[in-house]
Amino acid sequence: MQRIDHRLPWGCPGTERTLSVFRFGAGERKAYIQASLHADELPGMRVAVELKRRLAELEGQGRVQGVIELVPVANPIGLGQMFQATSQGRFELGSGKNFNRDFANLAELVAPRLEGLLGDDAQANVRLIRQAMLEALDALPGAGSELQGLQRLLLRHACDADLVLDLHCDFDAVAHLYMIPQQTEAFAALAARLQAGAVLVAEDTGGSSFDEACSMAWLRLSRSFPQAAVPLACQAATVELGGMLDTERERAEASAEAILACLAEHGLIDGDWPAAPAPSCVATPFAGAEYAYAPHPGVVSFLQPVGAWVVAGDPLFEVIDPLEDRHSIVRASTSGVLYVRERLRFAQPGLWLAKVAGHQPIRQGRLLSD
Ligand SMILES: [Zn+2]
Image (cartoon, rainbow, N blue to C red; front, side):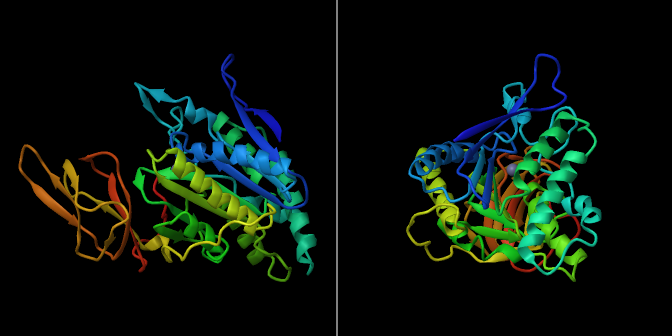
């Protein structure tokens, strides 16, 4: 195991931060796994603890078949953001920006460098494109902020990987995954092993999240250079490992083994893991996910547990205005799994309270919330 420490730019004097990457194995193929880009989403960090221990073991046994990079603390900026005893790991306090939005559009960055170079040898193209990505990221003008510096470092480590997993969680949730539709097969066994309640697919959510920045680059390049053989060389998923409180040891160990099995399936570890169980859900369009809001302010009582299958018209939660006695029951407008509930219990304008993974597209435009 090799540890690589990068210092982030723009730290105020005396407060410089470090991004630490743990690298296992050697070889042509590569997997990249990061945890807690939203810094207070800690199930991923807990799983990374297990992965670090297990990967060191497997490396010692000579079973790591390529390079595996692990970043257990992907967001040292957010991890230090405490506000009156509350952790704020989703948005950078200074700028208000979401840590998992607006990653660089790699296809746009490298396309000019690739003109006239790509042919019909897919493997040669993959090598050329990865090299161009690394060079393009290095050639960018200096990062304008600590956040931008962090995002570029993370992407630089991930962009030449065959497999990328970004470990997150939601507030109160069943395990679920996000990816582009072309890659559901590649992650089907992982979703089943994690007993995912939903697999949400979209080509472009409009948010340029980390997994999208990695996988969409190849899809965009394959379309910009239709005459060349450009495969989808980076399989990337955001893995939501349940809810904010799901850091129990047994669960973390099981999630880590599911991820190791995924690495083995993709040829990055030598060894056998138990076969994946039957799928726990089918992939649904992210545009089919209903975000349910309250019609007025009030205190909220949920009427269904996370993981419940609801049909359109089923009650999701009630909201009661304690002064005016307004009382509303909010019902599902689509059928599917109630995969996330908000953790706050007072309805505010613009605050979604529940998400249902429906099969029919019902949303358009930017699909990711802030
Ligand atoms: Zn997150």
